Length: 225
Image (cartoon, rainbow, N blue to C red; front, side, top):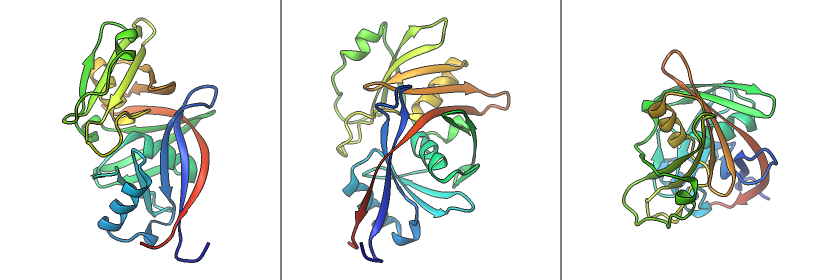
């Protein structure tokens, strides 16, 4: 590896209790190695993860988030993963500051629901109906969900970004979980995708907490483009 290589930590975020599943995330700790939105967008597209994070200031917690096709003002799984990786207590985004806390193997972030990009929340009658869904045509971001156990707040969900950027289904989606929690007004335990787990809880000040487990996967390097 030479000094111009970009190093990307790859994590799995919102893993199940057994450490499996989770949504892949790329984190560029030295964000200054990839200056400018065009270069960052190109790297995010090359990596192909649902999101890639560029850390602009690790001490302050300033981060920049990209999907393969766009820049995001807020996203849940990148923030949970980056907070875990760098041991941060605050993450700073253009929309505002996201606070972090830790509880055993869980990393919690607290954010305002209005920061989340729009999602269509579509309820189904049963988890089996959610499991049977085909990937819809591109056009809107659909979060399909059903109660597994309404009394216990347990939800089965799948996320379909609909962006036409190669990510047909999102394995675990913090922003959508945040919006569903606001809509239902209660704590939730969500099983999404192949077996990822997200925990959420409303707070008295109108914010919502999102938590998950994070597992390191591997490290990539990319040369200058």
